[in-house]
Image (cartoon, rainbow, N blue to C red):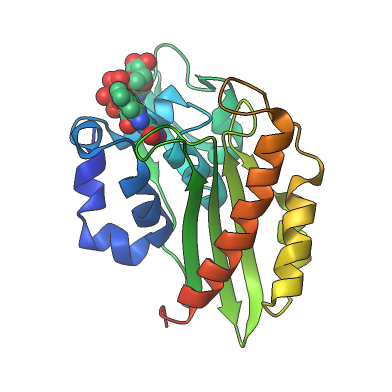
Length: 216
Ligand SMILES: Cc1cc2nc3c(=O)[nH]c(=O)nc-3n(C[C@H](O)[C@H](O)[C@H](O)COP(=O)(O)OP(=O)(O)OC[C@H]3O[C@@H](n4cnc5c(N)ncnc54)[C@H](O)[C@@H]3O)c2cc1C
């Protein structure tokens, strides 16, 4: 039941889960964030929403409770499709666990929306951890490109162990989008969404790499 604006203003969230902090201000407008909740957004599971992409990128855990007891669901198993999660009708989402970012982690949330505050046409949650100048952990998850948030596993594998460079990030953008088949709607064709997604990777990875150094 934590309101989105409460997490947005939290110094703890900003320092421990910077990707979440980067995504929160992009949710709608202040009036929306002053009422909307973290759990509500994640239970609602809108594939274009910011927080599901963050949860998927970071492998968040969802704690649900019913009279029968409690279970913990991994983000990979939480999102099942458009506005659909693996939560059973008798269960409440009572806790969401986001892992604290490791030292050397840089993050960026990128999105393209028709107007500020609109749901994104496409969004990208990006997190890079650098160790000794090389990428030791890469996490990319898209919003708005499928019926649920999707990880760009091919691009993550490519980035793993490499040193950040413009050429590497260009190839990551290609790999991240090659298998995507985004939905078309009145905001954009499938092809347009795919091009936007590649542009988000080209923007998000350098931004994440740049701020990785700030987190010792
Ligand atoms: C005009 C407008 C613009 C918006 N723009 C954006 C945007 O750009 N990006 C974005 O990400 N979101 C956006 N939102 C969504 C908003 O941020 C909230 O996440 C969303 O409205 C859910 O609100 P809520 O937290 O009050 O949940 P509710 O509306 O109360 O709940 C949403 C659903 O989840 C269920 N639910 C809620 N909490 C739980 C729980 N703990 N356990 C089990 N089920 C639960 C409810 O039963 C309901 O089915 C927008 C909303 C509006 C109205």
